[in-house]
Structure formats: C-alpha cells, structure tokens
Length: 422
Image 1 (cartoon, rainbow, N blue to C red):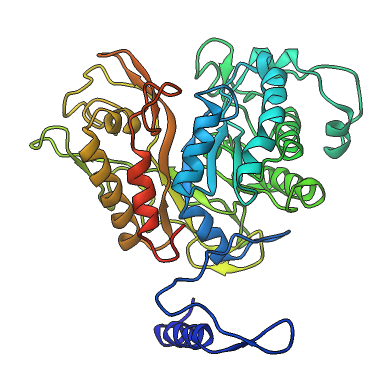
Image 2 (cartoon, rainbow, N blue to C red):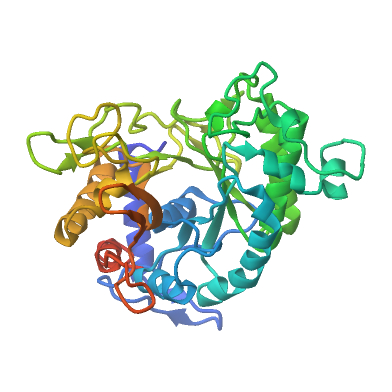
C-alpha cells in the first residue's frame, strides 16, 4: 500500500504529465485536453488485469440477471446499458438448476452475446456457477475434453448427480427434492464446474460468479480443491477467453478465500446487508458490523493477476432470497428488510427514494471502505406476495418493458457525476 506522501506525489506527477506537452507519434508534441476534462477511464487488459482497471470495471457494475437467458427485452436492455455507461454486466447468464434446459440456454446465449458486445466491446459479461445441482444434471452429456482436463478416463456418459453431493448427506435437498448443494471436493463436482466454466468462456463470458462458495467447501478446509478447479479454469481462459482472462468471484461471508497467501478470487462479492429503520416506515440504512456484512473485512494477499493488496476490491449488491412471513412489516428478524429481501424492499419504494438511496449507498460504501463498490440493480428476481410482482427492471417504462421502474436515469446520473465520467 502506498503511503499518503507517495499517493500525493503520484497525483502531482500525473497532473503534471497531463498538462504538459507530450511527444506525438510523429515525433513532435501533442497537448492534452485542458485540466477540466478528466481522463477517459481505462478498460484495457489482456491476460492479467491491474487494480485500477479492475476497479474501473467494478465502479461501473450492474446486476442484469437473466440478460442472456431470456429475461426482459434484449434490445432495450442493451440500450439501457449503453445509456448508463455500464461496463461490468453481472449475472447476465444466471441459471439456477434446471439443467435439462442448459444446452438450449447456452445456444440462445451464443446467438445473443455478439449483439451485446457489438454495442460495447469493452463490456465484461458475467455467467454464474451456483451452489446448486439437481437430478436433471443427469440429462447433460460429459464432453471428452472435460474428462481429459480433470485427468479422468474418457467415457461415454452423462453427469452423475449423486456423485456431486456430500457423502455424509449434508445439504442434501437443501433447495428442494433432488436439488442439493454440491461438494467441491468431489471429482464429479469439479468435472461439472469445469465444464460449465469452460463452456461459458467459449461463448465470450469473461467473468464467472461461483455463488456461495463457502457452503460447498465443507470437505475442502485448506481450499486445495477450489484452488485446483480455479487454476484449471484460468488456464483454459488464458488460451480461449476473449482477452485471455476470466474474473472469478463468489459470495464470501468469511471475507475471502486465501491459500498460502494467495487470493483464489479476482474480487469478492456479497449482499449489501441492508438494515431497516423500524421507527421510520420503509426506510433502511447501511451499517458496518450489521449481520455478516463485508465492510472492512475483505481479505488481502497476492491476486491471480500478481499484484498484492491488503484488502481485495469487492462488490456489494441488492441480493434476492425471498419474502418473510411478514412482508412489508418491520422486525421480521434476521436479514429481512421490512419483511422482504433487499431487491424486493428496494423495488417497493418510491422512484424518488430509490434514486436518493442508490446515491446514498454508493457514497456510503466508497467512504466507509474504499475497497468496496456498489453493483447497481438493473434486472433481478424479486418475491412480492402482496402484489404478485416477480421481477425488478431498472429500464425506463416503455412498450418493450412495461414494468420498468425507470431507475436507469438515477444510475446514469450517479456514474456521470464521478471523476472520469462514463
């Protein structure tokens, strides 16, 4: 970490270079833009990613659950992403179970990804490998290359659901009948995860969210299995990814996955952990230390790109998980926000309150922990039993998105007001 004096020196040197005439490619001099025009943000990387570039992406992150698996109007979503200046498109392929539909969903994503990237080639699209596997996985054939990569004998068969589960029965049927949490130490689980990750990379995804990684490592306390899997995924990305890199993250209530001083993830992520204010109807705030919030707790070490940090940059998001038995009411307990999950509580507020709350949350996170970044809400599943609403869209309302809540302007305004603009 730089000292305060070093940081000031860097700023002064940078400013001097910015204002001074610089050599041009033709051998003369070129004068930069005047001091009131901020430099363009850098989104360039290949093989590795620097901390400044990573943070540029995280500062323009938006959750677009289902963008590439049939959720919402693709054309209007692309328009919104361009209008706001979004660069990191979280959960854009977000498949929870239902593996029987996997190949169909992958084919649709293959057709749609070029259209998204044509609008902005700098965008990073994120896919998900979640903490769920269902019996439907037995309808998916294992490709030869997956066996080979994992050092397993090649055979003609489909994936085996039972071989992915904890042998002692832990977390079996946690998500419903024949829908369980996989054990990352099992060879079949690694085979499945590697197949998904490599397939996503081939399609053009440059980021993968590995869900609740810490409920899958009950038999991997030294993280040897997660390390092996992520090393294999990164080796594949180095050869096949668009820019020879895949950014891996996961929800980390412990603060991160570190093995022998090395960070296993490229950045961390976690829910915002919003705290309701019971004596102020429907209001809510952020607070260090509330529940298992990550503020100030992101672990450091040597990153997969080779740079060191005391605290790895992270995203916090408006998460979804359902509704309590007391939707819309205070004091439902736990991490409920007025009886709802985070995104559903947010969607129930007025447009004006949502706009002011997003600005508050972005500012609070940045001031409280400079390693943290707010991931804006763009598209997200919600659970609202009182009015039957099932999805949140930030899009401006239109014929294409009649249920749009119009938060895209608030997002655009917040980002446009930051140094460096869009």
